[in-house]
Length: 270
Image 1 (cartoon, rainbow, N blue to C red):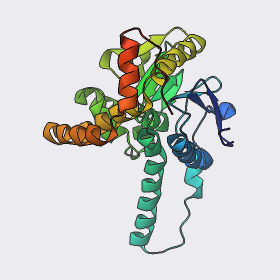
Image 2 (tube, one colour):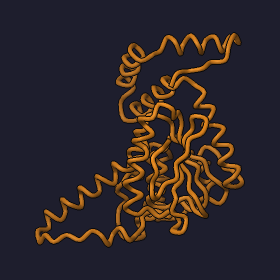
Image 3 (cartoon, helix red, strand yellow):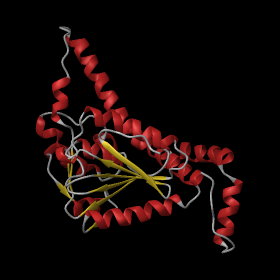
Image 4 (spheres, rainbow, N blue to C red):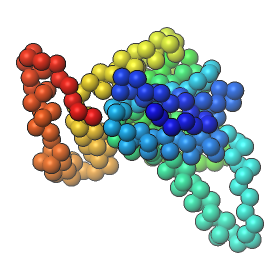
């Protein structure tokens, strides 16, 4: 059984976990509890052998309206020293970055299914997913610029690795909305669906197809893709050689080969 959370609804079926942002009355705005629970949840999923893929979606009319501005009201600091206040804020930002990085660091693929609103922290969050899917009414905005701040928990670092640099700069400098079709055209989302119900059905099918593969091979693929994003080709080649020398399962390899030859249906250990 998955743990229970105040701001998230988590379920597991057919080795696929579904994590629903669950503050529908607040458009799933990210309050302090949600930030912490996202990390707790994805760290739990990372260590749960029965989970082979994760769907990240939102309950209610919106996927995520970004940071709950009430969070800013809890940043009081009694120190008169600007340097000490600055250090405390820096530590807060690093903690929030870690909350979302847990999504990226989860060893199984995370598929974000986005409907309607996805702004600010919602974009930071979905940049951490392996793949993104959207409904026709979805839109994305780096909204931090409109409240006089520079986005600081991952969008400006991850988004340029996903879509063209010039598009990122325009979104970051203007705060404009990018609709679902543009998001698909620039490669931010893989596919656009008519509505949330259809999207969740189709994304669940994709997640289950991933869950049917060798868990070690899928985890290794994610590890290599993340590593290669941040390292040179030669470093990536060296890492995969070392990884497969120690992590390639002969049992899974045999099961996969027999399945390809039509001899049996491959069943893999968690």
